[in-house]
Amino acid sequence: MARGGGNRSRLLLVILLVTALFFITLDLRGVSLTKGSRSVTQTILSPVQKTVSTIFSPVGRFFSDVKNFGKTNAELQDEIALNKQLKSQLARGEDIKGELSQLKSVLDLAGRGNYKVAAARVIARGSASSFSQTITIDQGSSSGIRPDMTVISEDGLIGLVKSTTSSSSIVLLMSDPSFKVGVKIARSQSIGVLSGLGSNTYELDLLDPAGSIQTGDILLTNGSEENKPFIPGVPVGVVTGVDTAPDSLTQSASVSSYANLNDLGVVAVVLSAPTTAPSKPLVPTPNPTVTVYVTAAPVPAPTTSALPSGSPAPAPIASPTTKK
Amino acid sequence: MSPARIASTLAFFFVLFVVQESAVSLIHFPISGFSFYLAIAISMIAFEDHNGALVTGFLSGIVLDLSPTSNAPFGQWALILTLIGFLFAVNKDSISDLTSSPITFVIFVGGGVTFALVAYLGFGSLLDEQNGSLGHDMIVVLGNLLWTLIFTPVFLPAISRVREFTMTSRERL
Image (cartoon, rainbow over all chains, first blue to last red):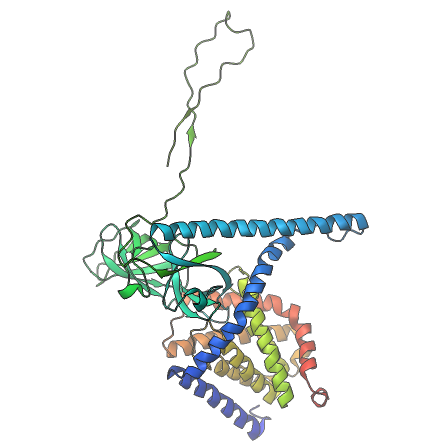
């Protein structure tokens, strides 16, 4: 274009760049036109996302299971079609079962914390065209959801409501680099700020340089004024490593979250909660694992009179013990 | 570019945007996500002539700016994709016809996607946006490049047909 485009192309380029910069300036100055356009887009997108989410999740799994699709026998085709239908129903049933399980767990957590919640299904994940980490849920302002409300899953905190329409909401996940939450260490009650890093690990900066922190410490939300955006006492994660640099002014640590943000099916938005931390512990506990130890019991020496020749020795008695 | 073509291109990009936001974003790609929208938008830009590349870049950017999940200011993608359109328009003269060499075409689309994401990060850092650690961003950019190189040859013929469909009779000549 530099050689052959001519003045008209240059003028067009300048006009388009200036227009883009004009939009950016408007947005940065807080003009509601640009925010309104995104809200309209979300209103248009959310019904499509709901439909696609409902259809796509069982069908996506179903297609990976279908085999022998190219056989020509008509009877076999009927059987395959029936099988396909049954598999589809089975996949959908499994999907619903999984969602119910997550819903039960998240409602259990909400019940223990005396939270009033609105349960919602995840209908979309953040766009790959931007670096922000979000999910879209199928409940909005008509269910009482407002921006800056805490969002939890069965294991604990997952983020906060970023924006809403009447029937959907966008949730900023705690892994987003712009996400920050005030937390306290359950053991020492030291407080700090947890920041998302865009991945599965998080950074904790203690506010008190002399505060106590160690690997394995449990982090809970510290709570915000009037519970917005964060309610107190929600499990956040566990400290996996402490930065012990001697020249550092503040103590920092790496944290692993309780909630698995890659596996969210059903979440709950906390509509109201007590302003104090819940009296019952909300930290998820691992399921007890039953381990059976088998120890060889002393075997009495067989006597030829008691056992016939060639008979096996009696089996040792198993002594079951339970280990958590 | 005629007003009718601008309208049809805009409608096409909006449909593409809905597909990206509602279906493609649900798929968990290994390494990192795949921006189906960016790959197709840059393929469309690469097919266009000088002015067409600029206008297509701007229109695709405006539609992408509508994303409700985006933290960036409205207009950032329009600016970046207009610049991509300019770069493709400049290089179109020196690389003759992109469509006659599919491998070169795919490499250019992959390069365009990578440049767009890096420019988005660079421009975002100027505006004090928080887009994560450098390592994480590099993985996202490289993952997008990988998936673009893999999937672009698959949808290239369809994009070519869609482009012909949106053209007026005069533009086909």
